[in-house]
Length: 310
Image (cartoon, rainbow, N blue to C red; front, side):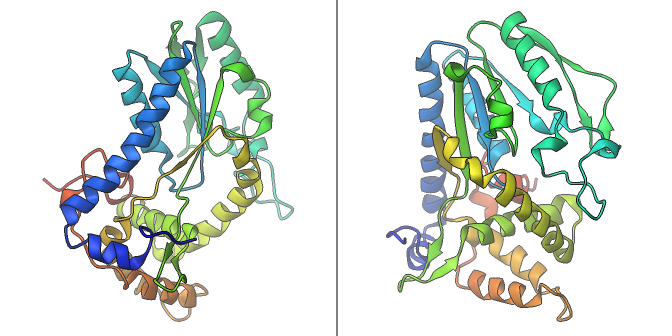
């Protein structure tokens, strides 16, 4: 349901003072992270923070900011990525047609995860695996990690809320966080202008073009697989979370708009995604353009638009 803030009309008006608008959005998001860090600090014990969320929700920046705020309370933290526990590509589960299914939780070496987490909790140290995505297999070298009594372990990944992962960890020490872009943008009549997946797709499309050289066509095709993974292996477990963090930055459509529209216009009429791209163009054109110059260097949006140009 629309509120007074998540409407096109509100965003258009707020964009008349872009620096103020951006600062308000950044403060809202940062304050939420600070409150989570305070809750952890007040718990008085070693916490295992499980962070899950769909593609382009902002997990990387959120985890980084959480580490920084924990340090303000004198608490060190260490990040463990579930992506490093992938089995080698040749051993990955398969779809009926024989193609590998990298989205399923069973593509992870769960036994290895249990072993390393158990060693961290009982011995205070372990050897963490690292996955080489270019080679499609685990690296030979492992990463040594040591923790002290008050250190926090942050486990990040698509499956971080899946019971196959969490049921083998001490429940009394877990804090489970679900991160997503959880608001839609409406017009004054209550019609949806951009839904949550639209907005995440725009983030991902711009990022993948800028940093991974992906075309819009490729982004759309990959999005089909991403959506399958989210629907099957993430969303059924989102209510297992203790905390849900909404990463929407209301100004984001204004700074992503120009690049996104330019990319979407390149899609040929013959593409199976052409009609969808045209609808997205019409939605994005309802927003004013804002320069990214006022977006802070440490903003979550920098995941998708990149650093400031020097």
